[in-house]
Structures are given as structure tokens and as C-alpha cells.
Amino acid sequence: MQDTFLLGYFERKSKQTTHIKMEDILFLYTDGLTEGRNPDGAMFGKKAMRNSIEANLAKGTDRVVQGVLDDFKAFSKGYPLQDDITVAAISMTGDYNSQLSTTSDSSEAL
Image (tube, rainbow, N blue to C red; front, top):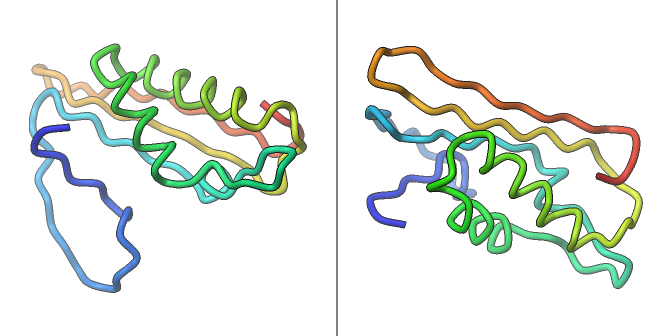
């Protein structure tokens, strides 16, 4: 990923400002995604999430969201969710209309 800034990715407590430019995608998620586990007890984690985002980034906001959820589903192998998962991707377009794609699931494995 070139010129990438992950908002909220780092755990330090400091104020940072970034500007979202046209064609940027803002990816938002809850900790249920990164802390989701598979039957062996391993967590999906930030690295797997980031790899999934990078793999699906050029496909647009809908594909980023669905791709990350598909990768999480393959990782978790049907293991029950311990927390809700919310994922959103927002893309700034040239006419200042944002595209928003969200998914939230708190009741069952994806």
C-alpha cells in the first residue's frame, strides 16, 4: 500500500489529523473482526485484516468489505462469534458523493 494511513490502527494515545483525498477509501471496523477466532483459538488479527484490505483494495468499497468478511469467514471456519463485527468502507468520489458499504453481524458466524 502506497501513501497509506490507517486511522485508529495504532494503539498510542495521540491526536492525528489526516485529509481524505478523492479516490481514497476509509476502512472502519470494530474489534470483533480483529479479535475473532478460529477453532484453534488463533485471532484473525490486524495483520490478516490489513492483508485482506490490500488484496481487495482496487476492487472498490463493496469488494473491500465483502473480501475482508470472506477472508474472516474462511479463517474462522464457522467458529462462533464472541463479539459483534461491523465493517464499513467509504470512498470519496470526484463529485463529492461518498459511497458507503457496511456490514454488521452480532448473532452468528459469518
